[in-house]
Length: 280
Image (cartoon, rainbow, N blue to C red; front, side, top):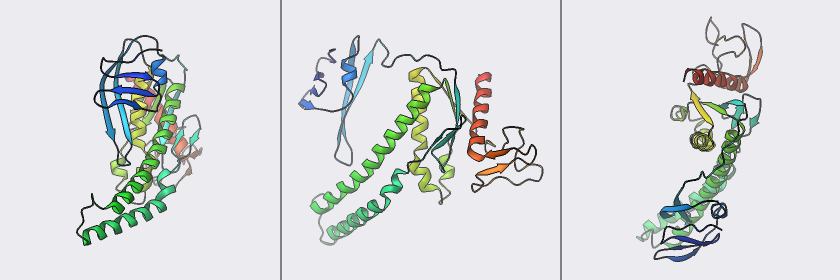
């Protein structure tokens, strides 16, 4: 087993690390694969942080002359992805990934916990006690934080697994540029857009593409939904009306091809990405 150390910080085994001043700490995580790596791995900056749910995290900056992930062979596959609120995504190969909607599953429980937290806050203020000294308030604050953390962890795990699968199985992944700030102005969709985690997902695709030697491209979303992939006709032109969010399926008035709205958009996104790749 390799010994990860920088002289003052080192792993005793896959479950224990020794830090200056703090001494020997028990940890959990995926560090066994680091200890099993061939070649030297150097530890740089070490940071310890605590989140609102009172969980402690250890972050290590690592350096090595050998790659941390193996180089992947080419798949000769490309994919375009349409992100939407109906599903999490629809791909140009016809696959659909459902939106897990993690926040909605705990919305009622969270609302009840936050109301209790507000009552305890008002009580402490009325009795002129600081919130730091109010044990009931701190206990409830921790409960609310743990509910939020549970949702974050589940969403983060879902995004990690989905992004890794897309990058590993395709040489080129194309998505539309994210403009969620504008979409959030639509209050009817704000919760769905915030819950889905699109921005984090695109960041994961970007850094994993660099990590695994794949290509990730974003394209302008302009007319990707309104354009017929078969003949190129754009809805809203020649006296036609633009598609609305309620129009999940439509028939092209020019070539009369029936389209599933988001699948057609994914095909257009892939085509735009291939054109952008050729120009680069």
